[in-house]
Structure formats: C-alpha cells, structure tokens
Amino acid sequence: MLVVEPLARHPQVLPELAAWMRAEWTAWYGPNGPGDAMVDLQRYAASETRLPVGLVAFRDGELAGLCALKDDVLPPVPELGPWAGAGLVGPGFRGQGIGAALLRAVTELARSLGWANIYCATATSRTLLEREGWLAMQSAELHGTAVTIYVKSLALK
Image (cartoon, rainbow, N blue to C red):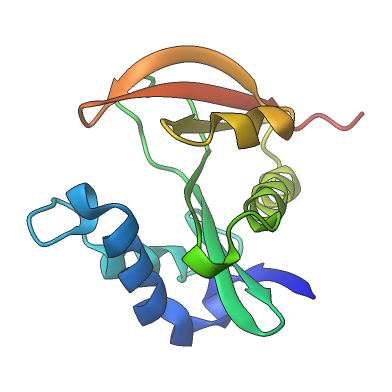
C-alpha cells in the first residue's frame, strides 16, 4: 500500500532523505556543492500548510520518496510560483508509480492552499510531467543546466 503524508509528521526520515539527496544530486548537495540537504529538508518539514511543504511516500511502511511544494524564486522566471520540486524516489522504488503519486499529491496540496497554477523546472522528468497533464512553457538555464519549465492549471474541471 502507498501512503503520501506531510514530511512534518515524519522527522525521523530526514537523515535517510538527506543521504538520498546527496547521492542523487551530488553537484548540488555533495561535499563541494552549494546546497545543504538537511537544511532544505528541515525547511520542508517545518509546516503542513505554509510553504515550503514536503510530502513523503511510504510503500508498505518503508520510505519510498519525497516531493516538495516550494516558494523559491527561480531567477529565469521570478514571477512564477509555487514550484513542485525536490522530486525523488528511492532507488529500490522506481518505476512503481510513486513519482506520479507524489506529483499528484503536491498538485492537490497547491490546489487546497488556493493556488491557480503550479510550476516545475526539470531536466529529467519531462515524460512524467507530460503524462500527468503538465504543459511545457519555456526552456531556461538553471544553475548551469538546461531545463524545461512546466505549468499545471489547478482550476477545477
């Protein structure tokens, strides 16, 4: 069974998630990178309703993934937000729909908080976003990486 819940309810998983982030995004969170995985995770775990908000997925009680709804400003498009980000599925859980479930959960969170749109900048998750109904808006460069910026309308149908 897959369960997605706010990270704020599960602070015990922060060290494991930090290790995953360091391994997955070494250029950013590794020893020579500018990011600090634990600091970011602590921010994501600080609230269930005030941005940023982290969500975690558990498959049969085992930590399986992370996603966050963030209020970060992206230099190429400072007028846009909030952002779906920090999407990460544990290596043993990939290909099981967990990333899609986290993306749907973060989208519903944004809708419940009253946002009209949600955005995502990615270099690697285009297929997932498009399969989930997100629309490509533009290309940009973020921290030296070419990304595509996507939008998802949260208007009720």
